Length: 374
Image (cartoon, rainbow, N blue to C red):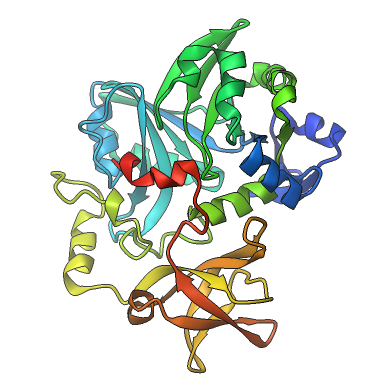
């Protein structure tokens, strides 16, 4: 811990719950409470409550808001309805990913970008480089908290706390409501592969909302879950993590995010570079792999084929659902396309693995994933 470490409004609550606290991009966050595997299974079977108030929120408002958002993201929101959200990378001129974000559209003149905490200042500065006098860009990360209720029982919990209209939201839809004088923005979004909701709330009401959710969700076995379970859940679901699986040196085309790059848009930052890459072809590609037996892959493990290093692991973990090691990485294109058998070098020993499709496990949400690609 350092003097520069940040705390969410729930920090003391996490400490009282005897959470194991870890430094995550200078935020002191709960890594686990009862244990990563038990929290993971609670989310898969019932519901988990996450403090994700470390995430950044940047609000873009004004006459030119839509044009600015369209310029900085690779996805196309020209047909996105009001009160709907969309996933998109933000790229630099070379096509490298500066961040992957969720864009929340209130109307043509107001958007909120939810960004990764380690990138908030960088993205805010980047957006301001392209803004005009017709737009205001405000980083509201320090005044907004964010909670996530994830799991098959999340809809029932949200109905008790936020009402039928919020429980009836479609995937990536959101709504502004007031509950007990708390102004909330409730969205049907998440990062676990399960059905779930995320709730934006003013810092001053964050602890109250946390307690209300746990109380109302008690009969549905809602339990606090930490960043450790969030990581194993997102890996099983096939979701990428910025700083590990994607960064400024990786393009959306290499990362398997081609569906988020809409070349039919008039213009966006990085378009020319991505068009060239598409024309001349990729040298490396993102892959997922499953271990054949023992051995838990970790970041930076080498990926081996016929005694040659063909890539590196970006994320790896033990899958509580499959009870085997799983991971992501980048390999030379031909090995990705042929779903090659490979080996993962773990502490000097090569363990066999198979390149596979994602998600690693089928959840109700991931079965309908393609329907939500906009």
